[in-house]
Length: 532
View 1 (cartoon, rainbow, N blue to C red):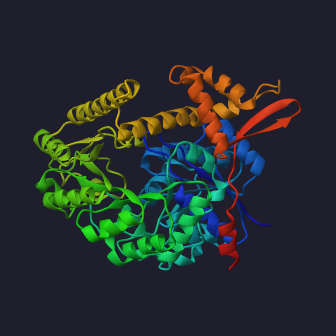
View 2 (view 1 turned 90 degrees about the vertical axis):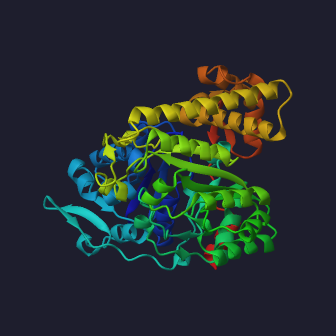
View 3 (view 1 turned 60 degrees about the vertical axis):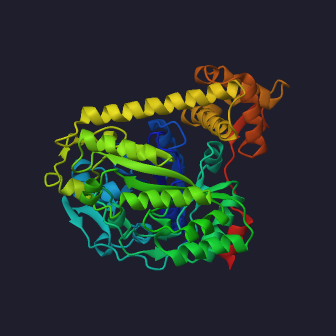
């Protein structure tokens, strides 16, 4: 009998922009490729509830239920798997938190059967194929009450052998409605040594790159799904010049026109590289700067200088690529003075910038050597590890002070947004401001629709001859969160646009109109590639 697997995308706060669960779609693709039944329940873009989990499990009847998680949503993953275990499924968890706290997880959550560590595609395949657990590398599990930790699985060196992610199992229309880009990777690994990051431990310091032609094949597939923007999620896309130019030249040679963004590192970019990326459609890069204090950068093993930050920023601005500079407050040696230095430095760059607060995730050097680094860890309440509030402090920077800095920063952002809206209403907004306001307003509406299941809850009504779009818009407008933030005309227009984009659809059944989010179909290109 064939094993049936259900993978669940664990919810996390919408303060983090929702992105396609790339890891789960890779896992699903490998299982599908070997002929196994697999489905994905994406709880990020639905209102989370125990009933939804139960309904899906009882309908699909999976033999295995797996959930991925990072530290901040591990408590939710744990809860999901407890529900699945009560229904008789074998339960599996993966992701960085479980990888680096595996024994702790199995000890405190006895309903979790197996932990898949690090890269999980072929580890999960071994489990689903029914191999004896003792023979499967890369897992931690229980046997007769004892926790067994098998040896690590070797890295997958040839990423080109992986099938494209099974995005057709995800409610892509919801992500498109939110106007978030579609994520993908062109390589795995990170050669850097930052003490606050688990990336190199998860995917190794050894870089592995995909064939640029396959990367752009996947980009074309993503565009066929209806996305107009792609997020390259490589830890550092710009780490290898030959690879960057290979991907960009392939995009250009095919005449593709779409927007994309990537993570970059200030000591890896050149003007020539950024010009090529811009020519290929890159509109935005994110630099991880972390601090405006050289000694903190050194203590954190960041391996960059402030001069390199300034130069890389100026090059990007000159070329025409937007920049988001990302900073972390609370790193080793942090004081109130060094935080002010960082704030002054961030402002001086003349780019978008943002702050996170240090979250010492399991597996990071800063957590494992916290005492040596002068870091006081204040809580292991993982729900608080969202990097938006202090869970640590240093001798020179208290948690209260860091929280105030973050609050003040976001107050400033809120004020900036209010001024943009005022300018729009007064007819004085710039094109950039108008674009920002439009995107923010659309995302705000989408947030209400997704996180409150409004289409599901208000999209069924009697077919009384009224136009279905207007009737749905009327129903939505009477929901408090909608009525207080949007005009009825705006709701009409946005619903009509979502129908035009083929994101929303309706059927007539038994005298009723029933609206639903449209599930994706495999693009013809994907079918052709898989048949080669």
